[in-house]
Length: 165
Image (cartoon, one colour):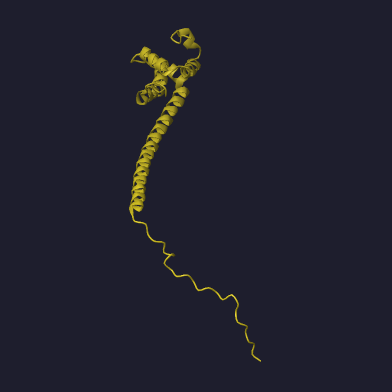
């Protein structure tokens, strides 16, 4: 579908952009990069700004979330009729971008903690290995129970007891 055609866009720009967004899900990373290149640097009008933001914020393409967010904010601030029609979609996309950035940031923090934990685990394993090696190098100790004398044997027939009368 060619979304550049004015007659198609005039029907319902929001619906056309939602279809476009769903179409982007079927593209691989190379096709998304090609679509980004085809758009160029400028986005004239709210329709093109939202479309551009969709590509710039797509997770499988080289992203520029700050630029995508700025384009969406421009649509939200505009008083143009087309911009008003696209406001709900722009808010939705903006919120999605912010949530994705939050998750990316959390993922980086968790990854850093994981790397630090792995380094600490390796250090502790090295210390444990060193202690094990030291224990192996020590001369063997005699069994402490072997040095004790055997306990006296109990009598086999005890003497009869006399009972007091």
